[in-house]
Image 1 (cartoon, rainbow, N blue to C red):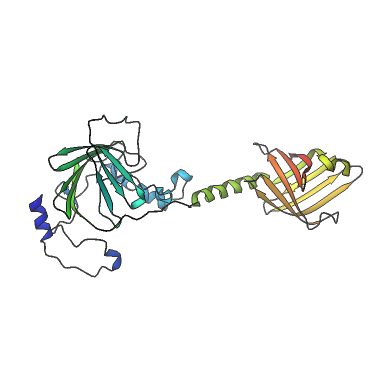
Image 2 (cartoon, rainbow, N blue to C red):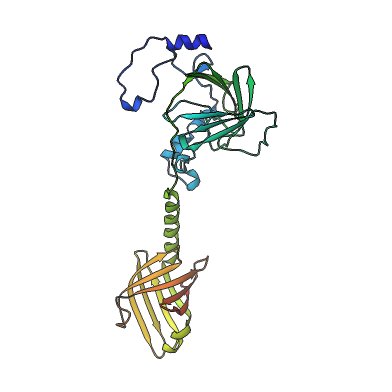
Length: 345
């Protein structure tokens, strides 16, 4: 390993002007090698048909219309899959070592991987995690980390749930660590394959990676979709089934016995209520707040001046089949009246 790294570090190269966005990368250290993959010798990952399909899954998710929240890209929720194997990037990693554990903490998404070094058994294959489960052992000065039980919703280069990843980390000097890993997964690859490269030490600190805190995008999208669905359930015509005045409003007049209620898809509402003694009709716009279970009627005109220009707030209960709608008119002192409506089919 030492000889290979010496050859790589002494390689001649021409450094182009890659711009500041390329400044995170070390100067070329691979002595002309064009791939991180060292086995097979052609430097190509030997994927099966299933592996080729899986490696394209993230791109297909991002370019296609999702059927539901499960089809959204994982990185929208800061779920970027496993952080193994250890790789160089703009975000450093810190390695902690105790007599019986090695802990790898990544700045990127605050991922932490704990590697026991004792002889404890592997966990059940039914327990699958984004970072898998790892066990470590020493082969001389080389730390060997074997990881399995990866969540199948994540893929590494086309891997599946059956991937077994073996990493070998060797400290070369104070500034350099040699990293090599081998991937075993016969369902995804026609043969095992290996990659290797050096990792360099840095004095840069680990910063907080605040990725998803305060991110309500998925919640708001789902809430908006549910609101649209609920509003669509209001559209149609209803006939009055029952009406009652509640509390102090019971003395304000007789109960209505007939009525029509109509909501249309453009946000318009019209109401007609009548009894032998009284009549009320109005029209305007409506707005449904599905989170408060409130529908508001913004009255633009009607038969009585006391309702014109008002916003009438009703708590609602709409049956699962959409046929029965109960509207409770809310006043300053609570519910003033309650009307049950049946949809006209």
